[in-house]
Image 1 (cartoon, helix red, strand yellow):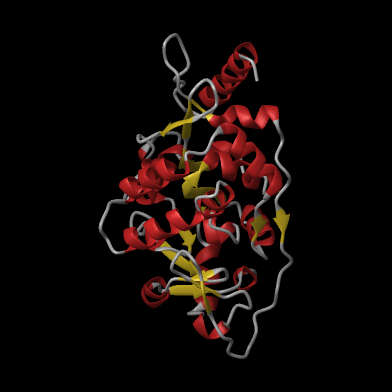
Image 2: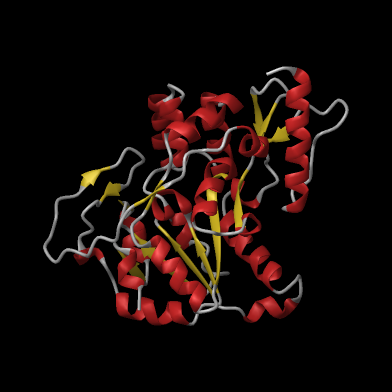
Length: 307
């Protein structure tokens, strides 16, 4: 790609960023810019929707997942907790925030990207180290990215060759929430460039996506990530919910009376309540034992939340 063409893509990216409230870093002498340009140069393959799978009544054998969780592809219902009450609580929610990796989609985006870039084992080792509490979320994110160093080209190829798989029942649940006048947001510690195709497929506006952003040099090589994003640090999902309340209320304090539900598979999702009003744990792709233990509500199939 020649410099003139790449410059034109950066200009498009800056336009997209400003409409989403993201400050542009393009300009004379400033080499970094979000990867939003990738959406204009190579449309990714559409995500794959999994059909709803009814919950099974018999126990099943769990297998370990590489990111430290436990896979539950056949969704054992004995892990579920108070699903009927979760449905009733969800009916009252004005705002519903979904985690993305291992929740909205079946994969862990950063692990899949690392594998694609030939750095899977190194990132997995770092993930295990981070789970021991030896580093902050932001430090772990930085060290993962310093290992992977994904270029724009690699991310575009990854999106084209490895479309995300959307968890069964998600589309139906989101449609039901909309019919109930709830507003749906995606809140993720992953990267917006990987999540945007999923948001598009689920018809979720990109202004309703809170996720991390990557920066690249003008030659397309990886430069850094945006450390100012709330989702890049510990406790960030709770901070995102505070911002979301203000966004829904137009920046006014009226957002304080909105009931916010958080749905996800991980501790960062559980710890976002409060300020979220209640949390529904999801174990349809990966079971985090501590989350399942501490969650008031827990489901292994999104179909269980349909009414």
